[in-house]
Image (cartoon, rainbow over all chains, first blue to last red; front, side):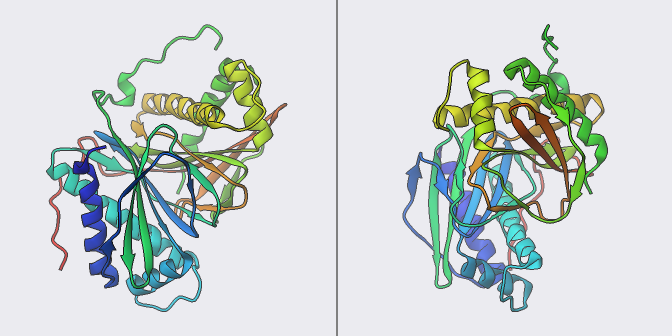
Length: 171
Length: 170
């Protein structure tokens, strides 16, 4: 995976966290992980489809998530209730959306899926044959860890209705 | 709101693929609609759709069911859910969803699908937020495979990627 795809995400996350949650982050060390990811308390999952495809997820601890939701929504949360969950998922959505706009400025076009939220420590997320680049963003309120399992899609982008259904005799 | 018209392509595709790839015949169980987060089964395959239909599709099953499925698909016995087995189950989700999107496009809703992701570990909560989920269990003799559809029609055209201008953040 090229750095060209990585930087927009870091930049977008930094911008959005600063603007929305007044949370200034510092980038930690990059790493490349081929193994499956064991989840932290809260994981926001989004997928990219297009010239770059794959999965982006943001992992954070419960306290960090509650802090961010409180800061974004301007109201104090004690637990990660549905409203706070929605705020965190939206944060992932905004960061990824902004990153995809930056990518399109670099002439890499992709669309993003709606977010899904995974709650609970210890689940294992596998992106299969796509290796993950891991970037921690460190803030005083805890770490927000960005995982990027993206690859360039070299195939011409067919619309699904242009793909013929192959005939299988057993159907 | 998830639209029921998106349901049948997935159920049909799942039936066809399971029968052809694993020689498993599936019966459709009772439908239900859920608004809350769902608690995962052992194995969950997650895929997203982006296009005129957008959202998340999840396939849940237990480890014994997953093992039996990959054993049948690949023609060799799997005793543990290793990398190859994981890849086989994720691919199964991919094939079912791909086939379903072709059927959807014939009904006038074209969408692209993301690569699959595998989530393992029972008891974590997966929330699709404001997308309510239609849940269809497929009952087979090797165990249930549950399809969760959290889809909605997208009203803006997403045909040619994002062309909007990046707004500055104050």
